Image 1 (cartoon, helix red, strand yellow):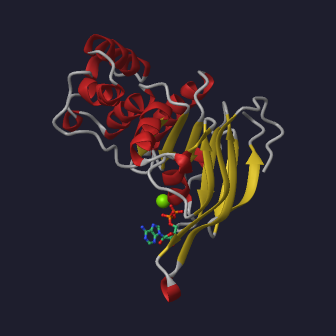
Image 2 (cartoon, helix red, strand yellow):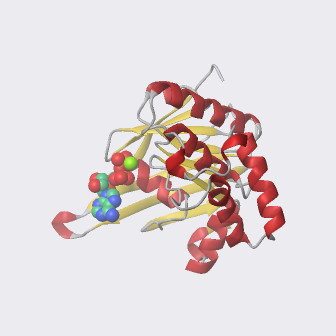
Length: 238
Ligand code: ADP
Ligand code: MG
């Protein structure tokens, strides 16, 4: 599906005729049904659709956490299906950042240590890791909270730590599955403002939400139904 209004033409993520099947026989579930979707560089795409329409399955495939049953996925020019699990893990670490509804922070680690974690896997020396993690935490407004553990932080602050961790390796694509689902409306606004800032800085974002006001902040909205994209809308106000 072509998005003609988007200026950048570089495709960051390209799902082509992707199906994901679970179970078999009478119990066969088509979580994704011949889904094609392109995410262009600089886009901020909101994925909407009823529960069970395949949003999380699509995010898991975009995030290389799962593989399609049929079809192909290209991430930043790399054909994902050709990669073995180790290469896939490397690609995930280098090109992708994740934010989830539940923040998935390590409870015993400080905010700083949580943010440094993806860089350990990427093999950066510790001085660089610390410097960059501090910068990322300052960027998300947590300069004074770096030494706090998750249980010493509010939900909104924990999600900010998770966002800092997600962007620390400068990913090609930031994936967020209902990132404001566990937050109150004020905190939701703060987190969405942060996504706006990251998008303004050139980060490509795909965000799943079932809330219209969250989706209205995005540049493009893709509506899912029964494992397919049934509608793509460009938000004119952004
Ligand atoms: P959404 O995120 O839009 O609510 P999902 O992608 O989680 O939808 O699920 C799409 C469909 O696939 C649903 O019918 C769900 O029950 C099914 N599904 C998802 N994951 C699995 C799984 N691991 N095993 C079996 N069925 C699954
Ligand atoms: Mg879901």
